[in-house]
Image (cartoon, rainbow, N blue to C red):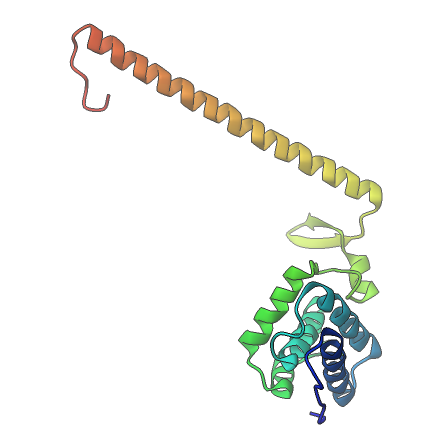
Length: 198
């Protein structure tokens, strides 16, 4: 790894240092420029949502590279920009578990979806938005705004029905409980003995 110096821990300087680490990694392994650009863009997003000045900058850099690789399917050996998890970890002298966990934390905190158009290749983003099952296979097609609105309405209707069903079930259970209590009282009034299960 190039001998890069981290001058101090201010957010701006730490952000620049993490970017330098990322650029050094991509330059050494000669990946396409778009991959590096997504990672550098993600550093800007991370610096607004998380505390880059805390923790090891190499872990931040490795985790950002890992996340970009994951959402762009670059852990697939068939891709010309294939990223080896071992290569990332060896380069930054980090453990896979640490990098993977930090990448997941970044994904969650920055609200990055698997097909986030900000950080993934256009051909990947265009493939997604709605899934259709055909003979057990997932067919991926782009959904337009009208489809998305219909999906939202359907989801809202499904949620409303589920809540209604829960409410009706609770009412039935309450009614059955009242009937059982009423039968117990009636039996006790008549001087009868309660059954074992009453």
